[in-house]
Image (tube, rainbow, N blue to C red; front, top):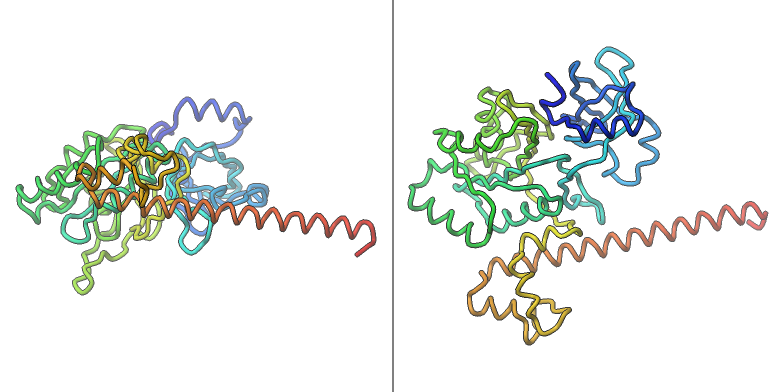
Amino acid sequence: MKLEDFGYNKKIEKLKIQHNLLDFKIGRVISEHKERYIVKTEKGEFDTEIIGNLRYTANTREDFPAVGDWVAISEYDDNKALIHFVFPRKTIIKRQAIGKKGEQQVIATNIDFAFIVQAIDRDFNINRVERYLTICNASNVKSIIILNKIDLINDTTLTDLISKVQERVKQVPIIAISNKSKKGIERLKEHLVKGKTYCLLGSSGVGKSSLLNNLSEIQLMKTNTISASTNKGRHVTSHRELIVLENGGVIIDNPGIREVGIADSVGGLEKTFEKIVELSENCKFKDCTHTIEIGCAVISAVESEKVDKLFYENYLKMKREKEHFESTVAEKRQKDKNFGKMVKQFKNLKKSNKY
């Protein structure tokens, strides 16, 4: 298998030369296990870890390798190697880190397309679709919405469901499939391009692993059923993993994501809710929050039903999350800055023998 089969291109080759990495093997991180990484190269797969310099210069978890990254490695034993360099990322899909204020969790890197998978039989939620779209838009990753398990509903119900999604989500392809009957799978395969990287996003139990098996045409991933008692998906995929398909394309499978915390600061929210952004240009006040102001064009559009109320409410909720995250980051940076000043003062006092 050639590097080009899992996404290597002229840009990465140019970076390899620029950073004097000609003596290193180049590979791609296909899975991560507590700071140990499986890296796939032309010669096979290597169990790797990062060198000390990369570890000590990392400021946040985002500075460590992630699934999808291109890396330069040196072999030191049979199928064992060290990661010396992580190539700059083309794209990075991330969310708020759960339970860690002001930090972000990397979902996957160097993604070209995201498959946002939703099952129509359980907790289908357009609000959640908009959340996934926002974290993808923040990284300029193109999205495709996949409605799964359509064998459980009739064509009329499916048409109505697609219409509801299209009313709120504009200019994003929607593909309806059934992993059981294989309906729609061939249409989805038409979107797979050799060398491009795709990421599966969705909650547990929506059928991501079954979809991956259907796209690859072999049993790559374990699958499970929905819990009868809770009607919630059981976790089958326990870690992120990059898989090269025989029929073209590279797919990163992810564990089910129940919380999609917004940590966007580069325009993802504005792109997802473009209609509201356009309307806000006609608001009476430039700093309008679109909540209580007189002369707010957005509120007016909601009241006249030109804008879906749920669409508007989801925007406000995600906007608050984004602002809270950004204020938390600013607070964290200030604390780090103050701590740095304290350490510097301590060193100066120690040098002058005044401590």
